[in-house]
Length: 308
Image 1 (cartoon, helix red, strand yellow):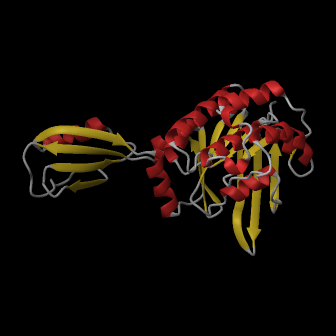
Image 2 (cartoon, helix red, strand yellow):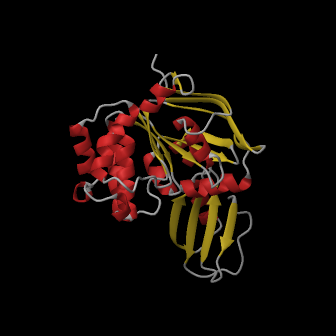
Image 3 (cartoon, one colour):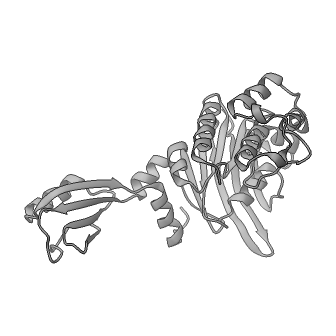
């Protein structure tokens, strides 16, 4: 039986009596792109730091491909690559020098072909001999991804990898992440760009105040927790809302020509449309849309949803 890429059981950590992570449990299967989401202060970075071995585990356990990250720390640190949210560089080294040295920190020999591939794919070649202090913010982030991958980790942790980068670089990074994932690297991602998580992640965990409040496939979150809305544009204005509209909520705009109706997850658009026709609304046009992951995220974290 194949071990999970990451297995977290009853993980907790407190600082000065305040729980940063509270009894957290989840697993990530090999080959997944897994999203760990939450607002600032949710406990994501503390969790990542415990997985990476740079923060002591308070209680509970972390296994990486079957190895305990406390008793087998040398093995697990070699299995994991981390791109931290903060830019961590050594201003005295050039990109070339840093990448040649970094694999050795994990007891791994420098692989010149792999190093060159990272340099080429991440667009680092024109800047190889610049010291870090001379690099732009986006170039530093490209370097940090290369550094996280230089020892060929099986689990790559990306903590806010596209924070503050331009659109072109964001697409470049995600194309490369998809590429290495297809070749077998498991990805754990945190991001505040929730449209990225929606497009990239197979499953998503949402944390809030140290608690796990959701853990589902992305499609299930969108289907079961998301609402849908319908904009009904009218040929002639109406002065007040029709009685007995069968939907969760309805609003009429100031002009009286547009109705916004919110549907429940189980309610069909056809059912509502038939009802609107039965009450003889002067319909000119209709638009429908589904809730995004961002809307679901805000709904859950602001409501203080109970842990599943």
